[in-house]
Amino acid sequence: MIPQPPLGAFTLLVCAITAGLAPLLTPARSATAAVSPLDPCKLLSAAEVAMALPKNDGGEIEHAGGSLVKGIDAYQCSYTSPDVHIFTVVVNIAADDKLFADLKPHFFRGEATEVPVGTAGWLRGEPDDMKLTAIKGRTRLDLELLAPDAKVKGPVLVKLGQAAMAHL
Image (cartoon, rainbow, N blue to C red):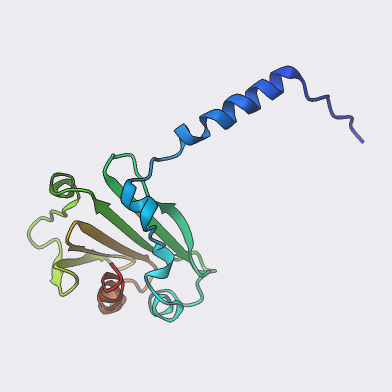
């Protein structure tokens, strides 16, 4: 057994400083996030997620509230299958119209197909990477499916977008 060095004053100082800086190193949450946190992994049921990504891991929250931009809260849930295909749910909520203008999607003509999700929705992608973006109020929803059959699941993404928007 290798002997462990004693916990020195320097180590204690580093731990104390790190503990004191921890709140500064994490993204700030807005007032709305603190009052009503959003769990992006609960926007869709397990059965709904399985329509896009069968045999998934149940999802994991990658981000919940706050962001690098003050006044925009970001939430992300990622689902992974054993064969390493991914389905991601991302929600961004802006505190005001000016901030939402930066979140509002802009696509080139022919790049996306309009779909009936939220106030406005768009579907676009490649055979193995389909994306749905929708807006409602100051909320932007992005769904992305990375799988070999992603393109044929475009209609599924539309249904999932409608279901998720019903909770937002």
